Length: 185
Ligand SMILES: Cc1cc2nc3c(=O)[nH]c(=O)nc-3n(C[C@H](O)[C@H](O)[C@H](O)COP(=O)(O)O)c2cc1C
Image: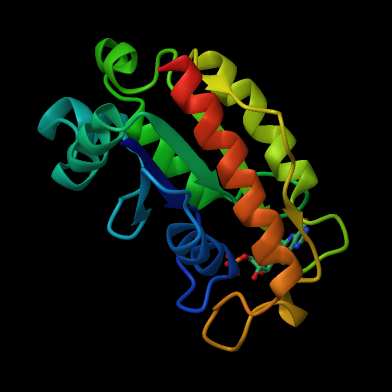
C-alpha cells in the first residue's frame, strides 16, 4: 500500500484547492491512499514563540503524518502569481526545527497541483514552490502537470470539483505520481 499525505493551502471554506484534494482522495488508484489535511490552526511563524514554546502541536502532528507517508501532495492556490502566504507559512513551520527536516522532507517524493480563478491555473505558484522543495531536499515529480484554471466554472459553490475532464486528468496525474512514489520508495 502506498500512502500519500496531501495538504491544501487555503483557509477558505469553499476552497477550490481543498475541493481538488477531496476529489484526489476519491480518485486514488488501487493499493494507494491519500490522507487530506488543511493548514487550519497553524499560527503565524514567530521565532520567539518557537524558542519559548517549541513547535506547535498542530504542526508536530502534520510533521509526523508526512514522515509516515510515502509521498507528499501539495495542492496550491496562487496569489499575485506566487505562493499564498498562509501556505508558505505552514510549510515554514513544518520545516522547523532544521534537525527534523531529514525525517520529514529529505528525499520524500512530492507532487504539486493547484486550482485558481485566473487563466494560468497556478503555473506561477507551482513554479514558485520549486526553490522551496529544493531547499528541503525533496524529490519532485514532473511526469504530468495539472494547472486547473478558470476554477469558478469547474467547482460548485461548496468547492466540489464537478468537471469530468479535470477529474479524469487528476486521476491520471495520481496514477503517474503513485507509480513514481512506488518506484522511489
Ligand atoms: C490576494 C489574491 C491574489 C490573487 N492572485 C491570483 C493570481 O495571481 N492568479 C490567479 O489565478 N488567481 C489569483 N487570485 C484568485 C484565486 O485564484 C482565488 O481566490 C481562489 O479561490 C484561491 O484558491 P482557493 O479557492 O483554494 O482559496 C488571487 C486572489 C487573492 C485573494
